Length: 335
Image 1 (cartoon, one colour):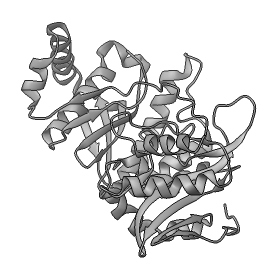
Image 2: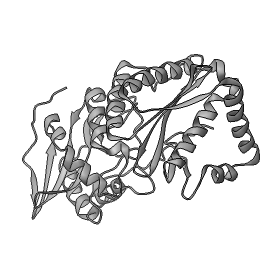
Image 3: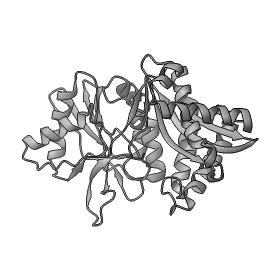
Image 4: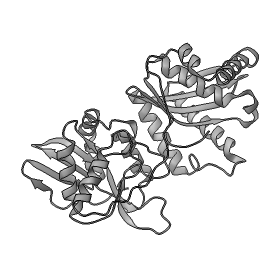
């Protein structure tokens, strides 16, 4: 998609310059600066990377217009609000508003304003002045409750007599892996859970020739994505279907992003084979010191063997073995 660059003149306040970037080409050109800024911020996560959000825009930005807002001081990028303008996701009555890039069906978590560490107050002050100028509603959904610069921005807008409405989001459960080995992690589980994990892994290996593969080559990536999608759809077929990997544009998004993530070293895509056939697949990311569990699929015909639980267990073991400090299951309240 392409939009004409109709940005208004930048707003400057002293040495602070605030600019709206509405042209996709200019957003693509921000890649190096965006990545450096994100790494220097407290909000650093895979869902705020230039790679994730520009891929989202390419495949899932239909019906919206870009509105990425940059904050610079003496030319240095010190803040960035990755926004779009369009109908609010999930609303019965369409209403145009600013919202985060990445919002909607793809399941981006930990959305935020990106600000250089130590410069958050200056960044949100500049953004609040710019956003308050046109009065367009802003939805800042999917924030990380542990640290969110966007929450500070909301408070700044409240000072300007904006009405703020807060709604709780989904929980994002995670496992603290700091200092754990696989043995010590298993020892931390409830006895029955620990017994089930060991029994299923032993049985799958001993009786069913289980092989657990991490996909690393580009050729295997393409095959494994197709396996994941097929297993995921089969798992959910009798449950009314899944909205996670159904639409062609969602599949195209993940085809593109898994390719980029593999090139960056972030992709963690696993396939479990049982008796020589794919029985389960798990799609995740390793970014900085965190492992993100994103999506899974398994053959319902093999559910009695516990292939789903075994695949998750082996991905946790892999995360521990490569030194991840956290295993993040992202949003959802599934058992």
